[in-house]
Amino acid sequence: MALSIDLGPKARQFQDELRQWLEANRPEGLPLDDPNGAGGADGGPPEWNEWADALSAAGYMCVSWPVEYGGRGLSGIEVAVMNEEFTRAGVPRVTRGMGEWLVGPSIIVWGTDEQKAHFLPRIIDGTDRYCQGFSEPDAGSDLASLTTRATADGDELLITGQKVWTSGAQVANMMFCLCRTDPDAPKHKGISYVLTPMRRPDGSPNGFDLRPIRQLTGSAHFTETFITEARAPLFNVVGGLNNGWRVAMTTLGNERGGNATTQHTQYVRQFWETVDMVRQEGKDGDAVVRQQLAWAFTHAEIMRYSGLRILSEVLAAKEPGPGASINKMFWSEFAQRFAELTVNIRGAKALVMPEQKPDEYTPDAWQQNFLATRSVTIWGGTAQVQRNIVGERVLGLPKEPIPVQTKGGAQ
Ligand SMILES: Cc1cc2nc3c(=O)[nH]c(=O)nc-3n(C[C@H](O)[C@H](O)[C@H](O)COP(=O)(O)OP(=O)(O)OC[C@H]3O[C@@H](n4cnc5c(N)ncnc54)[C@H](O)[C@@H]3O)c2cc1C
Image (tube, rainbow, N blue to C red; front, top):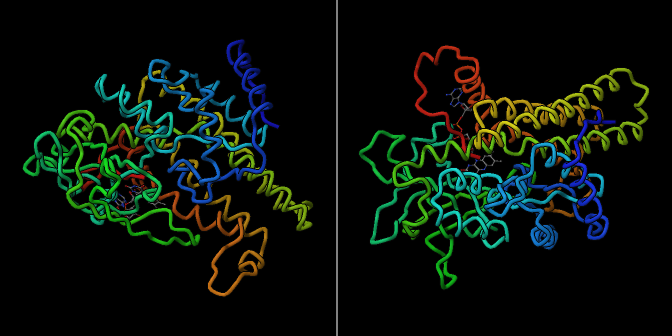
């Protein structure tokens, strides 16, 4: 059982209200996890869409955004309460994916009043679904090396280049895209952050050619993304022309710390599924397995409390600091070790694919989880890059002997 914390009257009132609403409205049989991993980056599987709209209509979307921008201004404790009530009700805590988690908070910090009024409601009601156009074939950790170009054409930008690993691009209609708008400026200075429509007003593609990349898990939730003369209004540049690096840092900070209060719930659930599996395997008397389970449970609990701390920091400062990198390192390395542990406990059967038709490739849920978690120490900035950030910006250690130009790492 989780330690109980004193919620205080406001959070308790919210808990009562939410519990009643969930009791009356919760759908049955929805998948609880996004099988594509990557933090439900694109807002999750299609079966979640109707539930997402119901949550949005009831005001349970983008809940930690300030009230003046359509959120509920919930505190860290209240967001944690919300996650736990969803788990209790057996329904997924669906969000607006990258729109809610990455783009919206960056617009709140850097957007003009007109941009906030235009773009934020469209995220909340699901009109705009975003994918992240940061990484390129030669710009991953060293994100500022990106070469996708944008040139002004009247009151629009014309964007040409190649992005890669674009999660959820197939279901998105907008890309938050980093483009080079001043090729003569130092590499961090000539970049702009452009909210780019993926279709033209008549519905035809806006210069986007998406080529799915198949993953170890069998799914293809990201693409190589070729962009040829995509048009975006200058109005859609967030933070001002050539100031996109600062905006991107806000986005990346949220990517590393912004989901801090939601992620432990999935590991608590996975923990109890693992306990059931251990019982079925007849290994619940095995002292080593019991010790490993205790390790997993304590780590999920640590994640719960450090998540609350990070969210409180974000709500106070409006932006996550470099401490968000500690969160990213902690949960991603835990997720991998936990998945390895479940594979070890299952033994030889973990290595055998479930029975399936010829040409089919569908690992079982344990195998999927093991394979999907290989990627979590890469996306959102690799584990090595997070260590650099923690070493230099949190601990104040000397910089690397060969200066690293960027501390990038998109999703
Ligand atoms: C599942 C998944 C989803 C993704 N989704 C998106 C998305 O939606 N949008 C998007 O833009 N990108 C996305 N990415 C890309 C991701 O951001 C990059 O893979 C990541 O930033 C690393 O870049 P890279 O792959 O080019 O590796 P590289 O940067 O080439 O790194 C290779 C290796 O070198 C190490 N390394 C690099 N620099 C340093 C350094 N300074 N110090 C120490 N070690 C270093 C790295 O840690 C790594 O081990 C996704 C990636 C994955 C795996």
